[in-house]
Length: 557
View 1 (cartoon, rainbow, N blue to C red):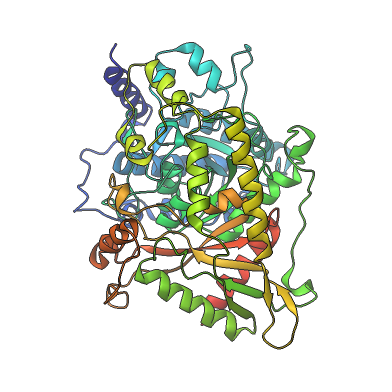
View 2 (tube, rainbow, N blue to C red; view 1 turned 30 degrees about the horizontal axis):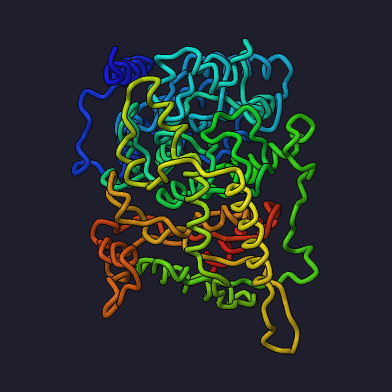
């Protein structure tokens, strides 16, 4: 069969796994329904909305006390996910029957023993496509796995004849999680929009005219509309943070290998200079903390040799030697100036932190961010995209338009010596940036170190789906080179009255001008405005605690 036919069969197969009574007779247009979550809250039974409105922490508490069953909770999230998929195209794999069978097992266990199997007992958790599960397909955005059985075995880790699953999935399942869907990614999981020849375009669930971000875009779209409360994404250039920002979620980009990547399918899987990381995305900060702590408490370093043996180190604000913290604020990266809502959000943050007695410094980039951005792009294309081209050739599909728009690759792969030079540059850039955390004190001739710095999550709150070049990526990628711990925090929403376009702004480059002209306050009205809170490497606990502090300070304004 032609690759187009195979892709259509796969899409049809997904729809065929949805209960007939859950299929929509007609998909409303993007003009009729923009916000999927708001639409579903009005259409679905109040009992179901009540369940999907709870946080993950609340759901596991209700299940552990016998107020809800794992089966009922799972069924409700399966239903909502099915509806969201039909309106946004966010699911790559659907396995509701497996999920409901697992939920029933958990209910039987609870009924017989009067206790739960673990801290996540009965909690439905969604997974980015590349997380491998036994008996569930993985595509990483290619058509080839559905044509070439050997390639499917290769990317799912089953080429040795073992039905493998990702370690992180096993750890979550052992804690009681229920898996029910995997979510869409762009081809090769490279791109900050989510589209592929296999599944087509995934839409933002808060505004279906807009991009959901990428590459964990299906995950962001699903969670954004409460089709999941918490899920797993991955990030090598902003792939957790972009969808989190575009859908108003909390998203954690941990430092390299803090959470286990063992058994997770990937492009450039063994590229050693800047690795992809895996982390949670959630509507609620406590849900994000619950999942992160659960994974770390399971001691993944005993199985995955890349994970540093760092147990969970609770960072308690009140127990800190000085409960007043030092924040830096990077208004812009000196490459692309962010849209007006971000400037207002940063002003709100500064006001909120100062009102609680914290110190706030302006944080200037200590080096040209173009150097960091260019390094990361050169690593992405070090093989001249040969891996992607080879995988496309297995099915006959072409490079999809997102890949072609996003990357200008060299004609030949670089040499090993040049790759080593890339590693050296990364190390040098990290040293330069690390020194910038020390700031002169306002009150004395002393130097003090920032606890974190805060920057826009992106230069815009999204862009029209399929038009990624109108919103160039600069605010996430530099942090992958530095390997800092980063958490996305929603701050406010775009207000077309408050956030009028800048007057008399003079763009500093062609990319800056493209982004400046992309701002449409009418289109973006009501979209979430998110920031990145950045801590030093392996400070995941501190980043979460400071995010809690920031959210509390904003609430008190």
